[in-house]
Length: 358
Image (cartoon, rainbow, N blue to C red; front, side, top):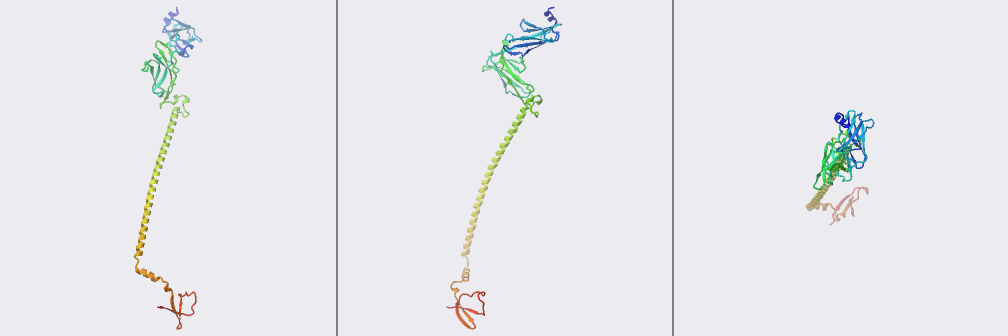
């Protein structure tokens, strides 16, 4: 029985094999490529088919006999295509593997640009739109995630009024438990397996209150268990509060200082006015007192003047003639007023009489 007949008889009765590429299904032009086809134990041989081509490759299994290796030395546009593989067991040929599409990138096309709308900073659980565009007239754009080249993320391009071609890829919900790094490529519809060189990588930054610290990488977690971005936000908030408090305190001190200055000026002015009023009152009182003294002097009775003149001895009254009567003997003499008894002791009593001489 021929292998083809055996395959027709056993088709669908055996598990289908698995086909994958190393280092990946997308590789630069001229790079080597390795395809692996894995079946069940006891497989006798493996076959690799290029879709739409009558040619295929046959390889015997490697030890321990569960997979076969197909090598491509230099990838070109001719090798960029869709492939399937089969394995042959004692029961016949297996069904075909899932298709694997090989892609080659070339510098013949200009690389597109990739940006996030509205921003590459996304709240955890939120969505974002990635815009891939180019001035070259690509019919399609392909978006890939780092470590996962899934060509199913393909969209037809749309021409803009500016002449640019672009495609918008909705992405989400975004969580911090994965790395969100993207690149995009451009290609023509007539050659869907030949892509441009990739765009620059775009990293999405995930933030928000719904972040689960247990899912973060260790280098993004502080010793206290808080995510680094939360620690930064707390530090910024504390700094802002301190600055605001300092500013409010400064404004309060300036306001209080101005108030004190105005109050001091008002107090000084009030004191000055009070002092001036007091001085004026004292002057009025003194003037009034002076007036009263003058009135008293003018209204002093004539009798007081006479009494004052009588009480005050005149110069003519100082010469007095005394008569000393001693034993009926009279001696006329003119003397000064008698001295006090303490000056001379008196031997005998004397009698004096003042005489008026005309």
